Length: 108
Image 1 (cartoon, helix red, strand yellow):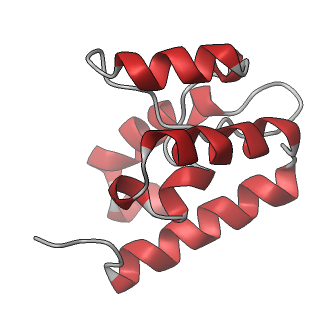
Image 2 (cartoon, rainbow, N blue to C red):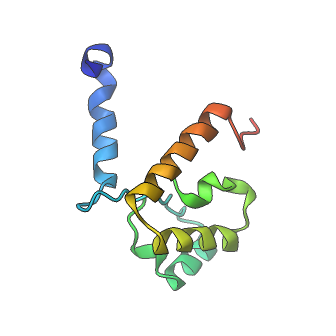
């Protein structure tokens, strides 16, 4: 039914969302660091966060996004690493949806 209404975007969305699911159904929800964020990359590597596959959103993003200093973002990422579960991922996705609809944290 979705394909009838959105034939052009259905396949690209599926191709985008499929790789973020790993075999045990836990989503990989962690935004990647930019190539020039050496401090973020270094802190994430020190806590083992670099082993996670980047995804579409994250615990740090729903808790402040760009308003958070980098060490706080890394603490949120470390919390996610230690507490990963399907229920936690669902909570993050739900919070992301709510924040997008409400436009929380958007200044432009």
